[in-house]
Length: 119
Ligand SMILES: [Zn+2]
Image 1: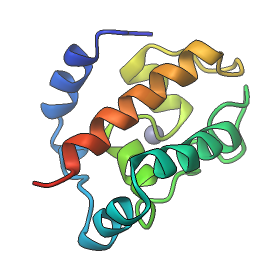
Image 2: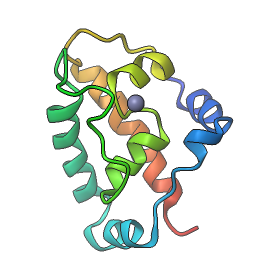
Image 3: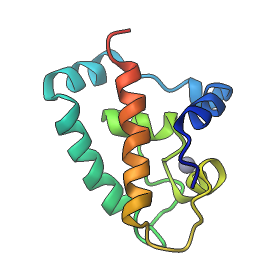
């Protein structure tokens, strides 16, 4: 796990695939209406259900591309599946995510969502 978020975001910004993910108007409006804390609480649930198990069902395809700000944030930050978590964030596959790993993912998502507001 790489806890230097500045370095992680710098690498993400060099990926044309990751950079392509931005909140669309409806997703941004949802974020503004619900607020970051509520959206993050949805994120905790998504991560627990879809990403945290040692072998998540349908891994690699479990995160929709749109319609919730968290899903877009997950693709934008390569926290969408266990393969991307391993490749981009050095969080190995095959074990249930620890509290520290989940906290790290939440801080990545929070930073990405904050960067999408008001631009
Ligand atoms: Zn992925």
